[in-house]
Image 1 (cartoon, rainbow, N blue to C red):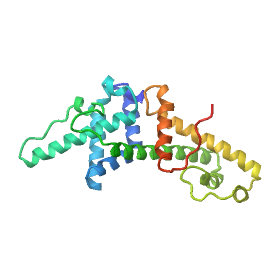
Image 2: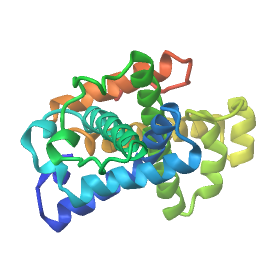
Image 3: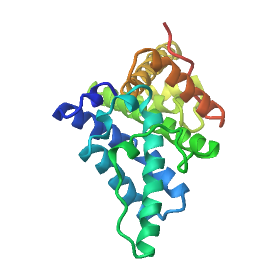
Image 4: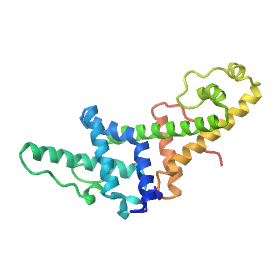
Length: 235
């Protein structure tokens, strides 16, 4: 997020574009929850991201303080509020409403675009699952780069989202390892996953002290719905 806040520089634009690309799913799902069709949601998500990129909304200092998740959700809700006003104006034969950078960048506590608790919870859960998937993909790439994709295919069942993990004895047999060696591999795998999770979260906050806060919130969101999740990062 700090990298994405360096207004106007190509590096900042690329960083912001990458963040938006990664978190497309929660944006699209939130738009769908506001009553738009899947097709409309795809188009509006693209349009919203273009507003952020082309109008440099993130150059403003205020939205940069805090978490990208909170800023993005507030900006999206405000964007949809203006989109609703624009559509109503067109139906009445009026001119297209203008969406200002200032309006887009307001914090989540704004008037007629206020968020309901259920909307925030749903967005946060999709956001958290997106972060988990990104961390899993990072670990999978590390194993692939090391020529150990077959081992990862066995160990993957023990990470979040894995389906019915086998016993350690069965997994060790599949991997061609002893149970002790398998246990060591799983410890290493979980550490890699936690590191990947923290790296992903780090890119979405603007200050170091917010990293642990955001990870704790992510744990809470997922555990609240019964999602299997590994323990917090070891010091």
